[in-house]
Image (cartoon, rainbow, N blue to C red; front, side):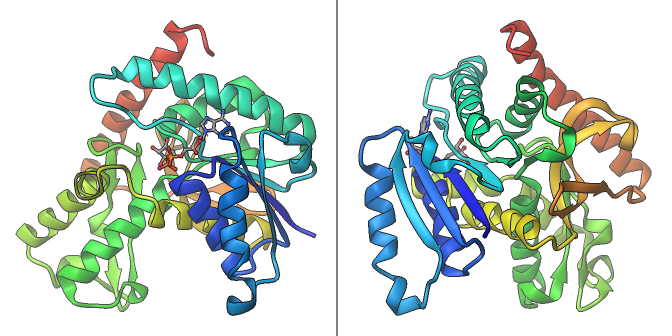
Amino acid sequence: MSKVTVIGAGNVGATCANVLTMNNIADEVIMLDVREGFAEGKAMDMNQCNKMLNIKTKLEGVTNQYEKTANSDVVVITSGVPRKPGMTREELIGVNAGIVNSVCGSVLKYSPNAILVVIANPMDTMTYLTLKSTKLPKNRIIGMGGLLDSSRFIYNLSNALNVPAIEIDAMVIGGHGDTTMIPLISKATAKGSLVAASLSAEKQEEVVKATMVGGATLTALLGTSAWYAPGTAGAMVCDAILKDKKVLIPSCVYLDGEYNQKDICIGVPAVIGKNGVEKIEQISLTEQEQELFAKSAEAVRSMNNVLVEMKLV
Ligand code: APR
């Protein structure tokens, strides 16, 4: 019996739970929120699709009842506040760090063996905080950002090339921020051929830029940050873990010398299976990509330093 807990029944958490149930990825899903009745309402709405969509997954929404989350195999953490106008980076980190820390303490009390998937932003920093504050082995903490950014990269390539997304392979590494992510255009392929051969340099640059501002573009259109692709990406990381798929997913993981970085959580290709991060894949990067990765790590580290200044790690 596989069980997933999704913390936060907001846009991203509810979408994640919805994808988990609609695709029968887990046998049981608990969705938990602090807002009284909110997770219960969302779960009731989703459960009313069960007959229509032939859903077998047992989904329950709860308000702060952590005992219901007991023995989860995976816990997805989406609880957090978005950055509000006038809020400094430090304030956002402070608020979300408090939420992530208290959530981790509560979930691990009931699911001491769970693998934690962190989605709350700033994701690279929240993943690092989760690792440091829980002191769990590094394979059990996965930040979800790279799969989302890679999916957005593939979407943009699909539009530029007029090739269906399912025939494209492409990856984004580095931080999960619009100035820190690195869409690896040199390695992207469509129908098995390098896209660099069929897209002009100008078009390639356009695709990379559109990918980097992908989150902000959606926020401007929607008035809040996006949820369909982020929630789906969270569910697909669960799928890889629960079904021991051992698939390569660009993920925010702890580096201890890989890619010339230490003591940082940042996006790199990782094999995800039943133990969480099963292996960090060392792919060859061009000199320019290596430089960009080092810069990205520097920016992520400066965000992590806010945690140090606040004595949170
Ligand atoms: N415990 C449980 N749930 C909490 C807690 C907590 N301590 N604090 C906040 N929440 C809940 C809120 O009540 C809300 O329902 O988390 C939910 C967050 O949902 P939204 O505000 O809709 O935010 P969402 O768009 O889902 O984004 C969640 O994911 O992509 C990131 O930047 C995004 O950090 C944000 C997170």
